[in-house]
Image (tube, rainbow, N blue to C red; front, side, top):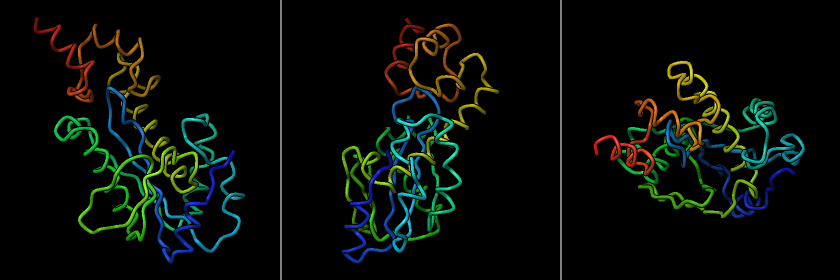
Length: 212
């Protein structure tokens, strides 16, 4: 099922033209960056749901489905960008501020100033007073947000596969940094690496066990 356009169309009718859908992936993982995508779809095409058929919440798609639609999303978009915040920034600022930082970087990467933001369940804080709407389950309801979700997910999964080559004993390529039993076992056997989020509870508990 393809995500809808009702929120985008509402913005376009209201006079906004550069409407960005923004979403993040990797917010709850134990390791690796939080990654955001930003996508501005054209407001003058009537075939967006046909051209982007199958684009929806990236978590509901298989890796093959996501990867097959990445180039189509990029080619169809007026502008798109991907931004990230490192595990170190997450530890320093907290996960919500780091998520906003990744989103700001994704928007900046588009080289286009948004008129309006459509966000997936997060409040926006900015100094330029960009109007926005935070939508619960936005990645299932907004095609712009869903497209951003797909771009961010594919980018982050590839990053974690590359990270797996540097830290093979953690199996990042398999669990992508999420809290699986295999990941927990590797942490207890080898301790944490630089890509782990030391501020997250599982890592804090591990550090406490090590120092006790």
